[in-house]
Length: 331
Image (cartoon, rainbow, N blue to C red):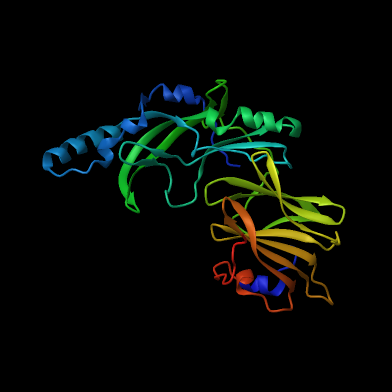
């Protein structure tokens, strides 16, 4: 990949689940209420100093692992709503792998230190003029997650006590209106054309195509990148929720030649690769590369390189693992 970028960096570059005869609520009927999680699962994480304590904790932990439990928690930290997608015109509501605080430790589905997988998701088509009202009505603070879980083995990650859980079914509902939003037992098909996850090099825009890319910031917040074109000006736009921000504009472009791509660089940086001129018989291709870094809850530019494929390129352009000396955050 590094060689390909060296040769031509300025070139053109649904989750499904089986249908279920049951709904979540029918599945939940056969599970036992876990109650308040701050008082649940303590035996899984208990640190005993004597055999009597260890024996009791092991018996209680075995009973917990033998059961099927219904847990109910606020959506914050366990649900993504949006951001608003302008291509499909609507919101993706997603329940990723759960990370729940219990008595003395955490209950985790998936890998605590790895990327979060998806338990369930649903797309809601919402016209632009209604997007702000829909987003406010379905704010994270108004939503609640319920899940039917089984408990697996306990372990430690970076000194933290963790128990792995298997999620048999999960649902999301609006605690204010009572409306059901997502049910993993009744999956719905997602419309095509959604944002590409920004975990690889993504072409975002050129004369023949326009798309969106979803990136998760270090604080877990989801952002969507898109492109707005006004005549011969192309602007990279960031959307959070329903709020947009212009990240950077490129002026006096040649529409047939230009293109814009994004590439992640570690967990807190994004490369913006703007092709001003495509490689041709008499030209190696030229453009700009901007390094954006997450700082103070926002992406800010810290390095800019302008040139063409025939010129030496800095290491931070070619190698996502290269250090960036002298890349000071602007005040």
